[in-house]
Length: 79
View 1: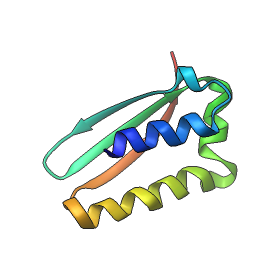
View 2: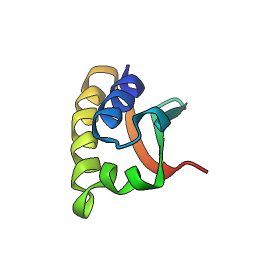
View 3: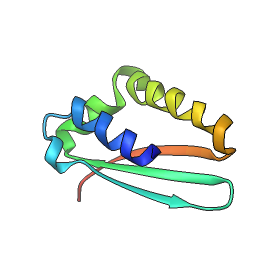
View 4: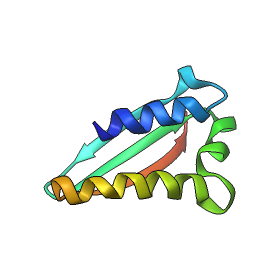
């Protein structure tokens, strides 16, 4: 659910939405979401002073109250 949200939100912002890929690694109490994007879109997704990715993290943190897991999100360029 969260990974789908992150992927769809990133596609709305990205210049190259078809290149957005999301992977998630889940452990007992932590879900790490890695958002892969075109190099041009990495800056857009992070935003000035990290404000865009911070907003995404804020929305995701609301899910912690529901399922008790912590979420970490990273944005990386496609290799």
